[in-house]
Length: 406
Image 1: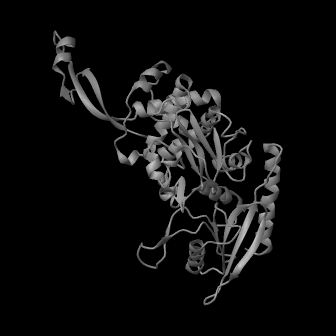
Image 2: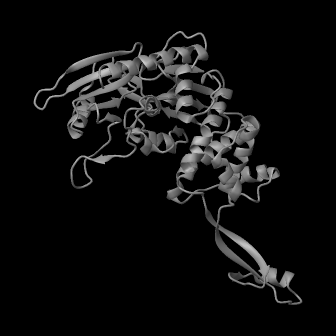
Image 3: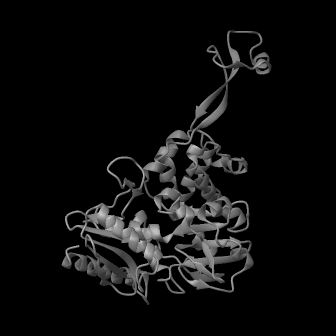
């Protein structure tokens, strides 16, 4: 298994991986890769992001981390802040953002670790799908009673109702929640509950609509060709794929069924932003875009964090910022500064030490441009050691922001 890091120059890669260069996330999703977060609209420009960027003769990884496989050949992309033997930083952000008890895992250690990651992420995929409502589809039902309301089933009527006693055999086509999609989700829920006991409101929602559930029907459900045709329910497509990976894993092993086991990509920039939202409690963290103009809906913008009391805008960047703010990022935070009539705007990024730097004071209408970093601990002896160290750095970050009245 090859192990590489995000936002890095890479070489000596297998041909199948190089063939993914300059393909955006939407294209990768169509090839069978799972994407986290599942809703591409949650992360700014995620749908346009590359897994591997080829430019000027070199290959570079981006903000995407994860596990990929082509047959027995596997590649894992890790955070550049994690070492060769651990994924402490990824563990920590997942634990904070998803509010799950992540048992320390190393994504590249074995196929088992990839499988465990899917178990942790499954509740989030389910929750996102249920935001669209419980999946429903038309199904055909057969009845034999006195209340005919569908099409007459002559063959079945003759078989069941001669001599005629008043009942009529007929068929109806009705919307139903108790379908193959929800059944495979239910089987996955019951499987996970054995390994990870605990209550979940979304799990109960699915249980309530799958009244015909039988554990013995698992093989039948897995053999069904499940197709989700209504684009409104597109979040269920990845969810069903995860269900199949989890349920088939015991029989086939990860990576052996090439129909739907290709791997998973996690947007580290989204994870970084959502993690910071838990720390920066004094800041507004808008979830939707706002119009740049007083009237109309064009020119939509969404600063990551702002504090109107201190007149400060903070934009998060997971990519490398140590050596300066890039041109487009600078223009972006300047526009945020004037849009919200703020006095300061800057970038918050991960680094090897926590520090605050002023880039400069703007001419014209004025305003301070800065960058501030959060140190990600290195060389930790254990996950608990890492947690203690990063909590110290979080407090240093908050103290720095408070000291500068940001």
